[in-house]
Image (cartoon, rainbow, N blue to C red; front, side, top):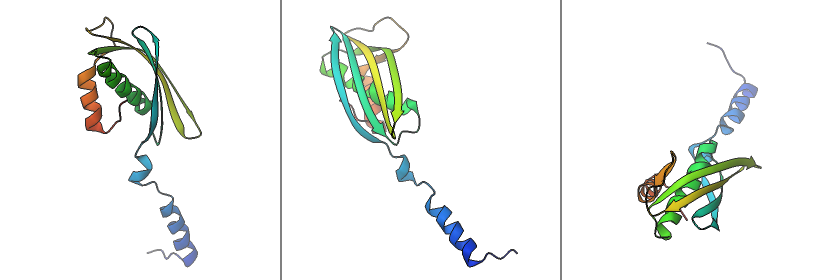
Length: 127
């Protein structure tokens, strides 16, 4: 059995305190800005910290789009684009969606009611 001196124990203690905890990965949602661009075209700017990947902030933007779609009295949205950036630990997404009363053409469509409910279950805020 190898003995570890006091300095070795102190070194291990210092490393242990630097280990991330679960709280380090709980996202902090910093807000949503919406901008109606033209008729049914809407831009969503969202910000958050403690995201683990760009998919986290993109999901936040999708949740905002889904709820906004419902607020406007529509049932569906189609994803146009999402740009994600991180600076100083703050993740930002600039996303554009079209909203419509019926299922739009395209591959990246969402049912606003289903997505909003899913967001609530996952604890992701909406508009």
